[in-house]
Image (cartoon, rainbow, N blue to C red; front, top):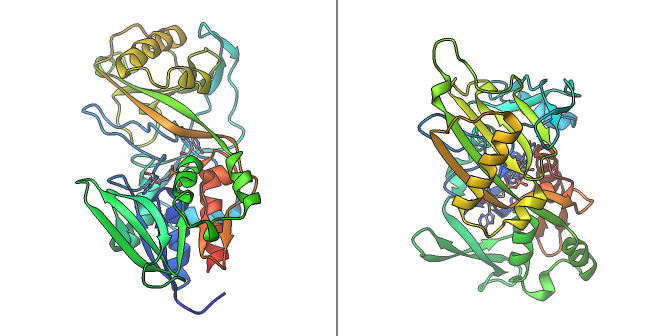
Length: 350
Ligand SMILES: Cc1cc2nc3c(=O)[nH]c(=O)nc-3n(C[C@H](O)[C@H](O)[C@H](O)COP(=O)(O)OP(=O)(O)OC[C@H]3O[C@@H](n4cnc5c(N)ncnc54)[C@H](O)[C@@H]3O)c2cc1C
């Protein structure tokens, strides 16, 4: 491990970035994190509503890598097992096609919302994160050809240049990484072979619907519709449904998060929110049997939700140029893939 302290820019503040940053800081390096959103967590995200929160990105995560187990033990109060044992597979009409499938492994959720894990892990890095700062260009430092500079745009459209970095690590979805790589001088880009591999990574979109039914919290009525809390679905519009209120620490108001299938999301990518919400509510009723009118309806379009074809290696790092990439898409489509990717990039850089 090098003993020289490096100044490292990390683009993105999802779980891959936060994992990477923590490891680099522990190794004695200085990091600056650039995040276009107002908070950390990326797709491990939580949306507030007058009726409670929705995990409108990642629903839960599984833990298979020992290093993830150990990292989670550093903040033991942040995550809780979620008894999603009721997960079943539903057919087009909401009939149970595979009954009572027991979960093969524990499902974990962060508490009080999925974004709590990244928030907790990022707390010691608070002074190093620039929010609402979208990186638009990754360039050679104007003062020193061995260093890097980033051009950014803020929420108020203000432009800034941040210079003097020994390394730049892109911890953003692959499509966004490709856009940024196009701004990197050709001589400092990954090799042609690596660029070809990168070009083969695919990430599917996902329309997500959030519904609240406060009328269900009345004496003698605790939930609406089915008695299961989460289900995979083969309905052509819907791939997944969760009763948010079944997760630990979420409050009791009946709330559902519904994820459209990748194929349907692609087909309706540019539809208006009203149209998408109408169609998904209809499908939700068909699958769950819940015909009540929700008091709260919201939707979110994820352009880059779930990796279809991953890169097949945990990260990309070129020590000569000081340019690296990480993210779930390197290995798969799961939260744990983001963790492992961010960790292994940091270990390579450190
Ligand atoms: C709808 C949905 C459901 C999911 N369900 C599950 C699940 O049940 N279980 C599971 O394990 N995983 C699930 N996932 C996947 C999981 O959320 C991801 O694997 C993981 O969160 C990816 O983390 P990441 O750090 O690689 O990327 P991200 O979380 O996408 O982080 C990238 C960050 O980079 C920022 N960014 C992008 N471009 C720029 C730029 N130019 N400048 C500055 N910042 C930028 C973004 O704002 C974001 O914060 C789901 C994802 C979605 C969308």
